[in-house]
Length: 115
Figure (cartoon, one colour):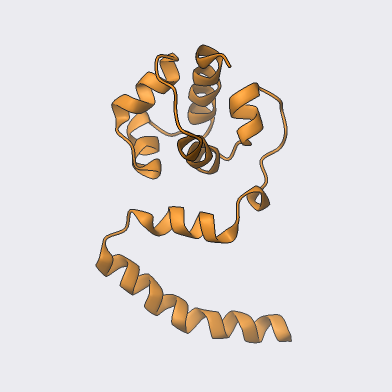
């Protein structure tokens, strides 16, 4: 495991996604300085953080970790994990509003699928 190479791939993927360190940090709920340290190769990360980076950067964990160019697949993460990550950092009022929207939207989507 080479932290410098992992950091370089993460930085490259972040640039490709047109995200700043601050924006990426907010997406995965870490500090911008932590992103900076990861990209420099001076800080290791947990598997949970690696997974969050994979989702946020639309890159496979295999690519970020080893450099193997496997395509990212949204199916590589469970729907529940993606939904949880998207809503985790929302304030309670926003989560409640989202739940209200989904309550109306889900029956519509189910009816459309059955047609």
